[in-house]
Image 1 (cartoon, one colour):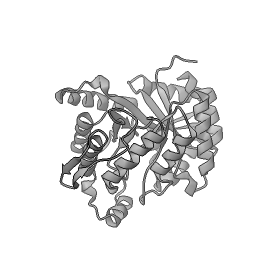
Image 2 (cartoon, rainbow, N blue to C red; image 1 turned 135 degrees about the vertical axis):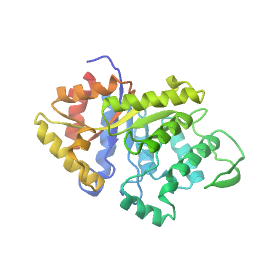
Image 3 (tube, rainbow, N blue to C red; image 1 turned 60 degrees about the vertical axis):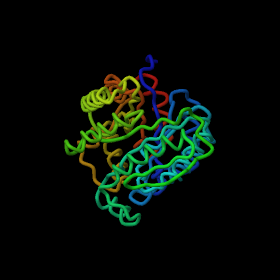
Length: 325
C-alpha cells in the first residue's frame, strides 16, 4: 500500500436510478461499504432539479448521514442553488450538518450547462441564465452570515430580507466549509472571473474535466488571486471530481464509460472530453492516472463509477486501485 497522498470520495450515481444503473438501497449499501473499507473518506452526490433529474441531493445526503459515522459528505456540486431560496437552503444545510455530526461541505456552483436543459429551469423558475453566477455569490454571503450570526438583514440585487435568524446553527464552528466548483475551460474572461470568485469567497476549490497541468495552472492562478485579497492559499482545500472504470480491456472500459456518461448527461461527449475526465483500464493504468492528479496538489479525488456493475467497480477500486495511489 502506498503512503496516502490524497483522500478519496465515492460519487454516487443518484441520477442512475432513472436508467437502471443503481437503486436507492444499493447506493446506501455502497456508501456503508465505502466507509467500512477505510479507503474512502468522503461520499458525494450530484444535484439538479429539472435539467438533469435525479434523487434530490439534500434528502439523499440526509439518508447518507444517518447510515454513516465517519465519511464527510456534500454535493458535487449544488447546481440548483441559484433556483433555491437561500434562507430555506441555509436552514436545510444547518440541519444536515447537525444530523451528520458536522461532516458536511457545501460545494457551490453556477449550474451552467447546456442552454436547452438550463433554459427549461430558467423558464420554470423565472430566472435569467446570466444571473446564476451573481445569485450564487449573494447566496454564499447569505449562508456565511445565517450560519454564524443572529438577526441577519441582507439587501442585494436578488435577495433582500430583514432580521432573520436560522436555528439551530450547524454543528461545525464557525460554520460548514463552502467550496466553489468551476471548469478550467471556456471563454478566458469567464474563467478569470470564476477563479477570482473562488479566491475571494471559497474555502475550497473543486475541478472536473481537464488534464493535470490545466489543474495546476488554475490552482496557481487562484493562489495568486488569494494573495491579492489578503488570503493564505495554504488554507484552500483542493478537490477533483473524476470518473473511473477498472477493466483490463482498456477499450471496453472507455466505451462503457462513454455510454454511461452520455446517458447520464443526456448528450454525446466527444472522445477527448471523456479522455480528460476518466481513469480507465487495468488497475495499474488507473493508479498511474490518478497519481498524476495527486502530484499537482489535489487533496481529495472523488470518483464516480462509470459502469453498470456498480458494486463490482467499487470492489475493484477498494481492493486494487485506491490503496496504491
